[in-house]
Image (cartoon, rainbow, N blue to C red; front, top):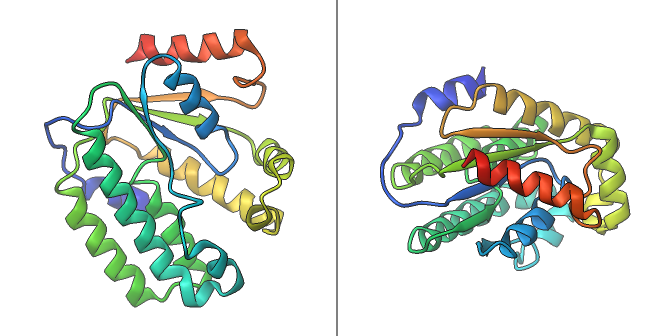
Length: 214
C-alpha cells in the first residue's frame, strides 16, 4: 500500500533527465552493468557509497545514523540527477525513488523514528517536483539466494554482516515497489543466470535489450 500511494503522489514532468536508470537490490550488478554501458558511450553516475562518511558509523549505530545517512543519499542522488540533466547519454546507478525503499525499511525496523521518516518523505516529495523521470528504468531482478551469493563473493564487510532475512525482506520490498511502478518506461530483466562481467554473449544480449527497448 505504501508504494501504491507513493506513485499516486508522483507527478510526471517533462524535460532533460537521466537517459537510463539502473535499479535493483544490493549486489545485483548495477555498477557492473553501468560500466558495460559506459563502454557503449554512456556517461556513468555511480552510487555514492564509498564517498559516504556516515556509512561505517551507520552499521555500528543504526538508530543514531539512519536518518542522516538516508538524507545524505537523497541529497547526493538529487545532485547527480541535476548533473546528468546537463548531458546526453547518461546512466545512473540506482534511482532516487529507490531510496524510499531503504528509508521505509529503516522506519519499519525502528531504526528510523516515524517523525524522521515523515521529514524524509516531505523532503523527497519536494525534491521530486524538480526531477524529470528517466527515459528508461531498468530493473535487474534477482532471487534472494543469488543476491546473497554475489554479496558474499564481493565481500564488503558492511554488507556481509547483515542477516539473510534482511536480504529476503529487501527483495520483497523491491518486488512490491516495481509492481506499482509507473514513473517512466520500465524494462525488467531477470539476471539470476546472467553474467555480464565475464560472459561477452550475456553482456551483448543485455545491452541490446536495453538499447532496443530505449
